[in-house]
Amino acid sequence: MSEESKVELSGDSLSLADLVHIVESSDIASIKKTVSEIVNVINDPESSAKQLKDIIELDPPLSAKLLRLANSAFYGYTKRITSIQEAIVCIGFDAVKDLALSQKVSQLFDKYDKIRDYSRDLLWKHSVAVALFCKLLYRREYRELGENSYVAGLLHDLGLIVEDQFIPILFSYILEKSEARGTSLYQSEKEVLGFDHTEIGGAILAGWDLPDELVTAIASHHDPLRVGGDFAKLALSLHVSNYAVQKAGIGYSDMPRIDLPLFDQCRRQLNELAGSKINETALGLILEEVEKSISVMESTGWFSHGR
Image (cartoon, rainbow, N blue to C red; front, side, top):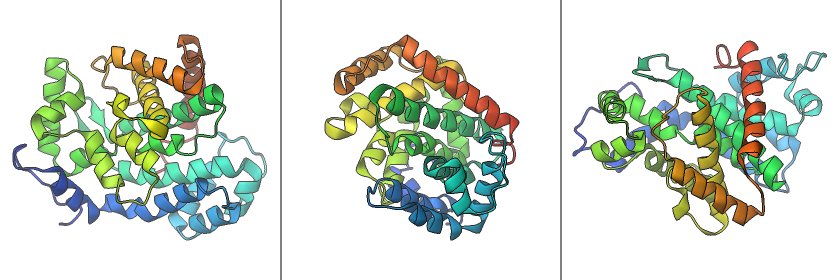
């Protein structure tokens, strides 16, 4: 089925496997190779900056977008950057890695239709904010790099894009149902489809050669307490980041229909796992930095011209 095709089936006749099969031959799958290669480079302690450079340079449109943003006021580098190698030297490996991931993932959000309070533009802003928040949570509270924290934020709502693109009538009905009843979006998805956007995203990304920790976090970010072992921290952190960004109203928000008691449980469990003290003050400081970053990104064309 072509990318333009739409699946308009009743909730009873649509399966999760149907959607995954359709996505595998769509434009959504086109980012799979580059995203998985970048993620695997940043998760490999033996990898080099040259490997990242080589991946980016094989994708000329990505290289062009990255260089344009590397030269923006957001990074504040006065000398003009003219190559990926120079970008890595001037603004750093970490910044180039995040830029490459965000600009590749942003291709999924190239649709400007609005459905009720939802649009891909708003969802993109929300996703970037969650990525920034989750990364800062790892750096500030856990004193860890959190290699998968940023991309987890970028991709956590992939399932919503799939619903929007391939089952728009059902998706509109789900949004309407959620708003009318004051329930969370994922609860309405469960009632209509039998599964939700976290399950869609997890099922798709399971075939992308990504770390299990990352796929698990995305597949469970509305039910992170079920995740145990080494994968628990990222799943809990992604939920906390998503909640904080939604509460602040950055981009698309499902507030006030998200679960406050669950958020508090996740925060307490993270403090036990990481030996951290994640309280309202700590989260507020992270949010303040995220809001500043989003504001500068908006003023330098990140959201209006970066895709």
